[in-house]
Length: 118
Image (cartoon, rainbow, N blue to C red; front, top):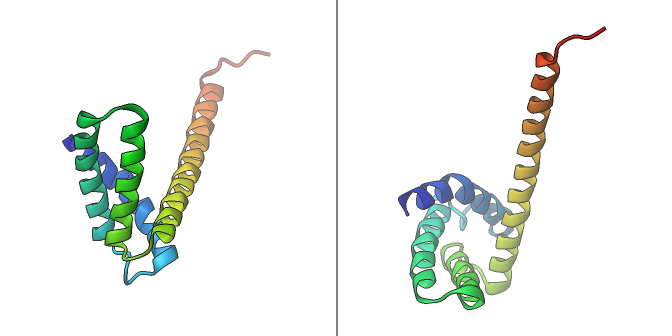
């Protein structure tokens, strides 16, 4: 669980913070709030997953994550949903960019290591 919390704080909190700053401003969306959302969310997710499973657990966790965003970023339900949606989009863009960089590095190293044939 500690690894999940650390990974969430490193990966999810900055993305959540950026999307929060875009929609509610820097006064309401603080990085410490984003870290609190991630830490509490991971802990509550462990509790919910131990009590429920499948679709019910997923629906409960979506509501929990939105409620955490709503509470910590001091916004309404619609804005919390938009913050979460933009965070997911930002996260996907970052993953795509990192994968393109990784693929580019992999392709370049294959070209260098390939024997030169005339």
